[in-house]
Image (cartoon, rainbow, N blue to C red; front, side):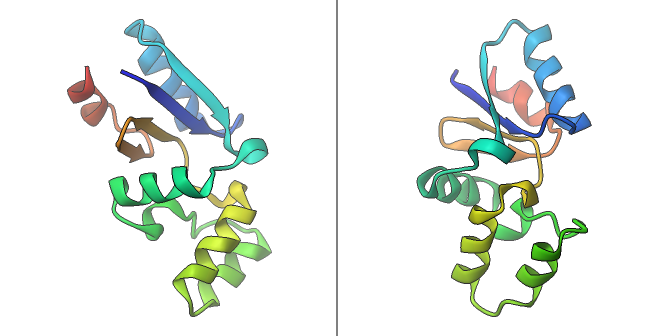
Length: 113
């Protein structure tokens, strides 16, 4: 198992995800999504695994860029803006190879063990 947790320092669900893997002695790599972001390849892999852009984009963000993204017509423009502003991702994003989840999903993670 090669677990990566893309999260935010102040995200409660990210902390719960880390605790889930720590409690089971499963090694994971934590990536601060706000400072590191996602590469285009990582983004495409996660987007495919979770079922699209809408699952990854935090539409409830009060950030002005989130409002702008909602009104962009092109999907590629929306994705570009999201990649430029990684604080707008829903977190945690947990990857295990080609599998991925968004949010706190212990029932799915248990099937990875």
